[in-house]
Structures are given as structure tokens and as C-alpha cells.
Amino acid sequence: MAAKIKAADRQLQYTFTTQREKWTFMRKHWGLYVISIPGIFFFLIFKYVPLLGSVIAFQNYNIFRGITGSPFIGLDNFKRMFAYPEFLMILKNTLLIGIYDLAFAFPLPILLAILLNELRQVLYKRIVQTIVYLPHFLSWVIVGGILVGVLSPTTGFVNTVISSLGFEPIYFLGDNDYIRSILIGSGIWKDSGWGTIIYLAAIAGINPDLYEAAQIDGAGRLKQTFSITIPCILPTIMILFLLQIGNFLDFGFERVFVFLNPLNSENGEIIDTYVYRAGLVDRQYSYTTAIGLFKSVVGLLLIVIGNTLSRKATGESLY
Image (cartoon, rainbow, N blue to C red; front, side, top):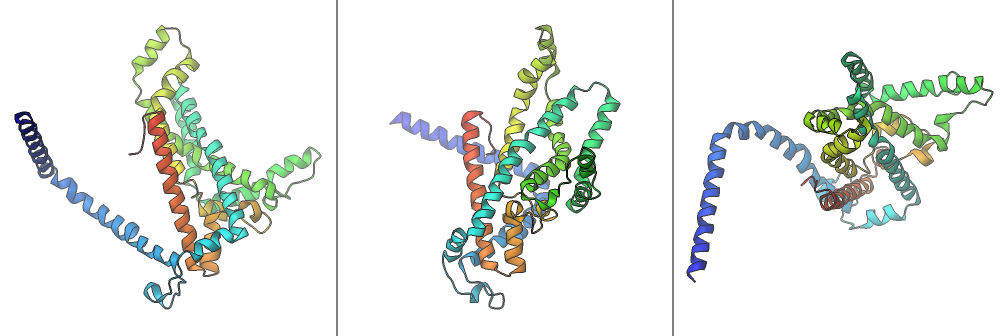
């Protein structure tokens, strides 16, 4: 009994000490809390309050009656979503494009960062970095215009080369077989250089003594890359991978819309462009809200599952 009383007393003392330390920390850093208030209000007003509007996914929403006056229809919008053949085709496109983007676009910034890190001429390295970063600052409208010109069946550079080799010109943007490759390739060209910034920062934080020890042991540059560089930046890779998983169904509206046309929409249209067409153009507000809610729930489940698997496999996780 005495041992239990002593244990409870120690726990109570620990609790009081912990609370006192928290209050001391808050009094010492009160300025940081004051600075964070505008950011907190921003997220509350523009991120959390709009979530209340998701209720129209369960209503037959009428823009004139509003949320309170629109009739409640339960899960009818979700049933319609999965019963609609066009939506199933669009969901398939979104999943395939997301998988291709994860398989081809995600590893390239890692590879590019490792290759840039191996350059020893500082001036040349900076020039290369600048060149690969620049496309990120172009809007998708400009990128789309560039690719439309390059891939033009009459005046485009690619078809000029194809014609010079004796083949028939290809209308790339008018063929369903090429649209997914164009979407992934344009994203790689635009964002791969920008994605290397985080990986280069992670590589810069690796202890140089590890490389010196590896050199003494006779390890070459390739061996050092696989034995030191990649394992040391693995936590960064896993965090960015989990963030990418969370946005798996959120491929981007502008990225697809600038290339989309009636000739390639069968393989090119994704959920975001479909929501724009059905929601804003056709004014099916409740139906498209249900689609957006479905996409958000899937993204949340993917990031929770991926985070759990990552924690068990590598020890790294978002939370």
C-alpha cells in the first residue's frame, strides 16, 4: 500500500512539474503564439469553415434555397456516382495517371539531385540547377502553349523530325494513346528541377566524415551513393512520398485542362476536370460535391495506410 502511495505521489509531482514547464515555455515564447494567430485564423476561415458546405453532398442542393432550404436525399448522390459509367471511366483515368506519375515523376528529382551533387565544377553546377529550375515558374497555360507548338502535326518540331525520317506526322494531342504520356512528361519537365531543392538540402546535411571513411575503405562514388547518400536521405524521401500518396487523386486541374479536347478526353479526363464540367458548367452542385468528398476521403485513407506501413517498415512517418 505504501508503495502505491509513493508511486501516485511521484506521478503527481511529475504532472505538476510538466505543467509548470509548459506554462514557463508559453510565458517565455508568448511572442511566437501571437505571431501564429493570423495563420490560425486563416486556416479556420478558409479551410475548416468551408468544410461545413460538404453537407450539400447529401442534399438536392438548390442555389436559391440555400443549404437550409434544400431537401435532404441521403446517399443518393454517391449511389449515382458509382452507377454512372462515365464517372467510372474518369476514376480509372485518374488512378492510372496517378500511378504513372508516382512511378515515373516521383523518383526523377531524387536521381537529378544525386547527379547534381556529383558535379564538382561549381559554376557548371549552378548553371545546370538554374536551367532545370526555370520551367517550374512557367504557368501551365504557357507550358501547354509550348507543347501544342512543339507537337503540332504541321509545324511542330517533333513532327518535322518524324516527317524527315519518312514517317507520317502524328497528331499527338488528338490521340487517346498519347495524352497520358504527354501529361506525365510535361509534369516531369516542369517540376522535376524544383523537386530537387529539398533533396539537395538533405544531401548537404550528410556528415562528410561518412564519405571520407568510405573512401578510406575503398568505396567508389557509386558505392557511396547506395551506401551513404540514399540511406541518409531516405527519411526525406519517405515524407515526400507520403505527401504524394495523400494527393494521389488530386493530379491538378490546370495541368490536364490545357491539353484536354474532345479527341483525347476518353483517356485524359480526370476527376478535377469532370467536377469542373459537371459542377460549374452543368450546375450539378450536390453531385460534384459528393465526388469531391469521395476524393478527399480516399486521399485521407491512403495517407493513413501509407503512414502506418512506412512507420512499421522504415520507422519514418508524418505523425
